[in-house]
Image 1 (tube, helix red, strand yellow):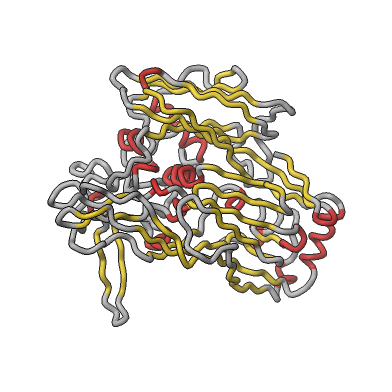
Image 2 (tube, rainbow, N blue to C red):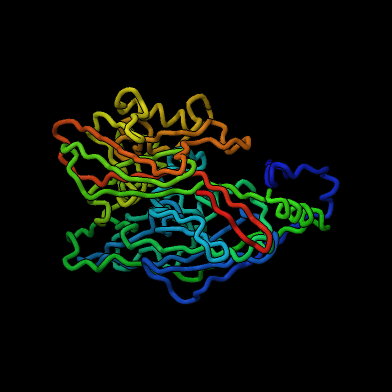
Length: 461
């Protein structure tokens, strides 16, 4: 269990006895809209003007899509893996100032989750869409019905209809703030802005027995009955409030977090050995995450598993028969198939003395994520081999941050010294790699937000 001190600012060390009247209460937050949301719509929430615990932030929604069409039978559509897939971008405004804006949020979340989540197949994550190949429901009389998703081609529409999901895990400001306990009344107006993803995230079920649907309907979905919950915190006295006031008056109330800048090139053929170049203005660059998204990632496809008549868990027990086990829509697929070497260059200086082969990239990723020597570390079970990882999950990560930075109040990263950072990613591919991909890159940066008197904020990014 997490200790109380780990959720408070590191300098807020007081005897636990002072918190004997501590309590928390769930609050419900409504957005600036109440009607049906469609792909690419904007939705905003204002956090309550009180002491809150960001670790309890939960977004709940109902998702509905409709069938591709019929050809003697119905071809259905479904939500992808991971409930966070619903967000194309997530932004945070404080007193009208943009302090965080993560683009391609859903693709980055999927990449990081698959690389280090130990709860991918846990029943605790069912509401977070951890397994789209499987659906469970219960009747009012207690009869449980378990269904294989994407297998049905009956006469009725078996698509996801009014299916409820929740989002409890976050990246960026909402997932990395140095303290989850925040007194919003001391900071000012905090607004969360979500962009609903485009319609390409959904996947289609098995093709009808009569063949492909002649005139398929356009990919689309709706989101309804959405709201957020968060816990309000009460300390029972004014000690916490007085402490925060003292930090503000002395210029020592600082909120730190990780943010991500995004770059994506145009579609290129692998054998042209493409590069991606960008310029970044960041006071502290902590990581670079580079991957390739397949050229057809927006083209509707079936769930990327070998077999559509079995659940993901069933296929996982026989990987010799069922090799493809990404268990997600093609929108979230990564592709390093045919990659020979990869190298990341910063301001003209290669980050490794030689371009890295696939096995070296994989090893370096484990090192950066702290999984190299952790025998309990795991990731998505579909990445059961280097070959499977290369086909569906691959990325090249480089780090400028000390391993324990962010955990022991250590600020570590590449300092641009008030000038832009020139980043270049070079890829080299084997002959015969004729597919096209989009080179995609995220820059993880460390940001510092100082809260001053009269709710003034000073952002170092």
